[in-house]
Image (cartoon, rainbow, N blue to C red; front, side, top):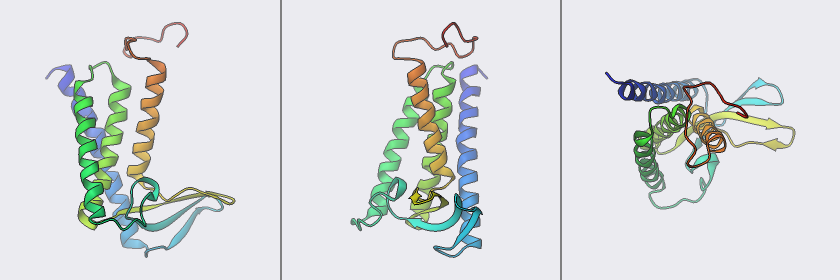
Length: 175
C-alpha cells in the first residue's frame, strides 16, 4: 500500500468518525429529549435544546416552506460532497491540513445529509448563548464543518496560491 492510499484511508476514517459521532449524539438527543426541551450544561452559556432544522446551515430558510425543500437541500449537499471529494482526491499527499479539513467537512455534510434523507430535517441540539446574544442551535456535523472551513482558511493564509507545501518538514523562518 503506497503513501497516497494509506493517507486517503486515514481521512476517510476521520470523515467516518465524524458521521458516527454525529449520528450517535443525534440518536441520544432524539431518544432522551422531547422536541424543544432544554437542559442546561453550563448555566448562562450552553444548553442542550432539541430542535429540528428544516433549513440550511444555522436554520437559514427553515421557515421558507419551499416545495421539496428537504430534497433540494439533499441534492445541494450531494453536489457539494462530490466537488469536495474530487478536490480532496487531487490534493498531493503532503497537503495534510487541507485533507484533514476536507475530511471534517465531508463527515459533517454526510451526517446532516443522512438526517435529511431519513427524517426530512436535521437534528440540532447544542444551544450556545451569552446574555442576550444567542447562536442558532447546531450539532456535531455542523461543528466539524465549521472547524474544517476554519482549517482551510488558515491553510490558505499560511500557503498562498503557488507556494509549495512542505508540512512534513520543520517550519522555516517566519512560519
